[in-house]
Length: 421
Ligand SMILES: *[C@@H]1O[C@H](CO)[C@@H](O)[C@H](O)[C@H]1NC(C)=O
Ligand SMILES: *[C@@H]1O[C@H](CO)[C@@H](O)[C@H](O)[C@H]1NC(C)=O
Ligand SMILES: *[C@@H]1O[C@H](CO)[C@@H](O)[C@H](O)[C@H]1NC(C)=O
Ligand SMILES: *[C@@H]1O[C@H](CO)[C@@H](O)[C@H](O)[C@H]1NC(C)=O
Ligand SMILES: *[C@@H]1O[C@H](CO)[C@@H](O)[C@H](O)[C@H]1NC(C)=O
Ligand SMILES: *[C@@H]1O[C@H](CO)[C@@H](O)[C@H](O)[C@H]1NC(C)=O
Image 1 (tube, protein in one colour):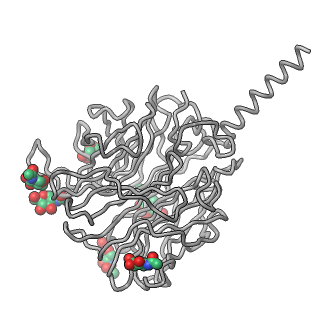
Image 2: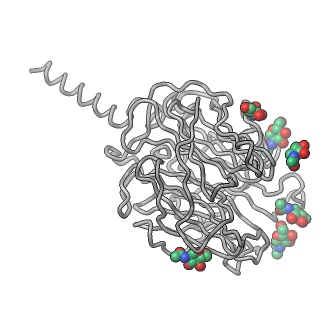
Image 3: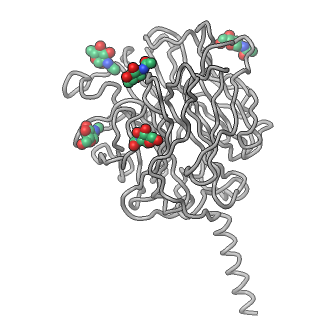
């Protein structure tokens, strides 16, 4: 009796652990591998703005599939090329082309600013494990900017148009030109939220805002996240992550900003700022901070993730578009605690993206570098950064983060951002 009871408890515990953190085989360290090189016959070989997503919301086991893309101007249509790795980014192959053809009145032109996301719960007809892809569709006559949403129900093989979240006037970064830019997707509180840069509000040169949807087709009102009383300042390029104390951090650049200490922006054009709020829907009501290290101010196109590795509060890791280095904070985003550390060799890139790989105590952060904006030849590369300090614990650190079938209340957001202790 006792032994069968014990074995029942033991197997229940094992099952619970297996459910909470499906084991992921250890990832090899990737120094710098090529994801994509534009073919020699492409007239425009410049790219930038890499993004990726690790698929785990159907409780996948074994080595995870990573999908990645970057913004290139392909000569044969307006698509994001989707690249796939099933070995933690050691090798990559082309999986599909996600054509942004959902609005028949938009022909020719380009797409910019991709973002990939995996659903952890159903929205409308889309089931958990559906992959979302957003980007900014700009037609050949440059008459509009369009933040469109596409979905793949077969792990990135095929894509369909879902809806347009926001559209605006011609692409023009001058204050007063009513366009939209740079989507970022985060599900929270049973809504999918798309954050973006918005120049349409005449009260602000540019602001950061989000719109929410329960079905991915109709989108709610524009809610401000960062909007300065000073019209000329341009917050842009937002990313959002949940941090170690359960709060939420967004980081962004601020164009046309002046450093109050020096009275100029010489040391940090597009200075990185950030906000920390109780929920990712409440950034509008909290004040912001400057991301300053003892050596300087981070500048342009920041991308933020949190990992449980590196100490009791884990580590916030921020990449920007000006430095090879990363900026780390193990004190829940305390403005006086940012450290500037070597990226361990990933090169500067325009809005590099970061993701925490499963296992290794959350110490492995994968960096995707889509190159510098405006360069005439870009090699899209991937590599790993090892977060200093102790191993972390919890979903994501020992294996995959919680997946949808068994998410068991690990917070509202995506599994990575859900501290469990
Ligand atoms: C297509 O895009 C244009 C330009 O943004 C917009 O005015 C129009 O409403 C869109 N059409 C549909 C069906 O979404
Ligand atoms: C930096 O400041 C100068 C002078 O005020 C301004 O012309 C320039 O646009 C600013 N650059 C950025 C990126 O904010
Ligand atoms: C608004 O910001 C600009 C650029 O930083 C600065 O030059 C100007 O003095 C600010 N205006 C006010 C009213 O603070
Ligand atoms: C980070 O460190 C590098 C190398 O010391 C330095 O060149 C750079 O200015 C620093 N940047 C920030 C934002 O601290
Ligand atoms: C990564 O490798 C590519 C060649 O495959 C090279 O062009 C690039 O400079 C390397 N990046 C870094 C940061 O070393
Ligand atoms: C591409 O850029 C490189 C380095 O910036 C430059 O040397 C080269 O001339 C450029 N090539 C073209 C075709 O513009």
